[in-house]
Image (cartoon, rainbow over all chains, first blue to last red; front, top):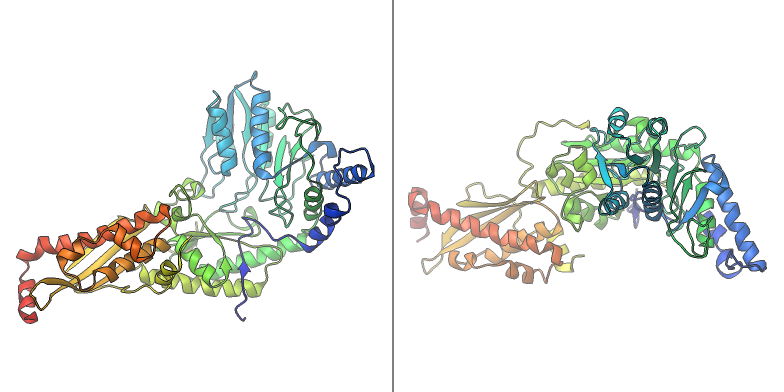
Length: 395
Length: 140
């Protein structure tokens, strides 16, 4: 395959807007640009569009439309769920539980509550990055009001058994929230089968526009409103609705088909198999069906992630890294450390995330460039000559 | 994040490699921190009889800045007397590269330290090392 200009393999960070989504959004910028709260025809059309979108999104998780609240994205939805439920239920208790591998917005929301007198337990994870249900059960106390554990991890792709967590929480009278921003539409969610009380989802990970997301809040959940004002979104989240964004989000939510998931799984597994042919390499996270269809987290011994990402970028391949050198804190990814990776291995980790548009030609090209870049960096590294006993394996 | 000079040196690093019979190796950093540099030096004498960095190579485990700064420090050191080379500071490395992002300045520090350590190791070993005097004789 000839060198393409760019191959985008960082879909865990954000995705390209789908053409169908752009088309769907278009009229709402210059033709039907009304405020959904206005009484006139512009307003009514905009209102209709928002409510249709709400119905569509509700259907994707078998929820009622009034259980879907639109927000500005995953970060807001997570802040809303955790702070909103903890604060609304503080008379019952002041203990919240999160996993140690949550996205920063969940961890920082927990810290915010901690600074205001709440107790926070951060659940450890096993080597696949998953919280063991039994361990969760033992951590819940009479003062626990909310547990927040993600559906799938953005760094290493492991899928969590949220149905089991939700069952435990329901039996013990605790609200269960899950951050499903990485899993939404890739892994089925049915709120009638799962006792989940709140779910965060977002648009820009599924070929929808940035700046819009939603939260499912089960009817009857006691939660403080997140934004006060005009009373939109059932008085839980005020603010003029982002009509084009919401319309685009709903369109994006219907795009992915079962065949897309199967195709991504095949490409993912082919890539994993090829990468493991490179010596001193291993994959992080769960395997097979317990792994997100599009996620590959791979560690290359003896080299560093920012260098690898940069060499690949020069060759037109875009991926991301959990290395410290690429973060402002100079600490490697908390997720990689939580699963027990040694620091130097965490530094040499990159994340490759596919989309439904990724082709096998692109994967072949990327594999070739990764192999070349790893070889080049190992020639530069003083560590590469030291014989390591690690075999290529799925960790 | 990085300027052209840094990117150039990162992609085609000068003096990358080992010196199997190096007179000293300055090892700094550690893999836990994500930055590790080994600076190899070979010491000779110039016409005035002063000891100079005759050859210098590096090996680095680290980010773009780590590779660029360790290569830069070897370029700065080559041919200098040991005294001059010991004086190379992180600012010299940073200036050679036309500047680094503030969060990456510590890499230039590490590179300068690596070179300094190599020279100090050499100077500390010198009197006990018969090989050195034989070598110096050959140079005259």
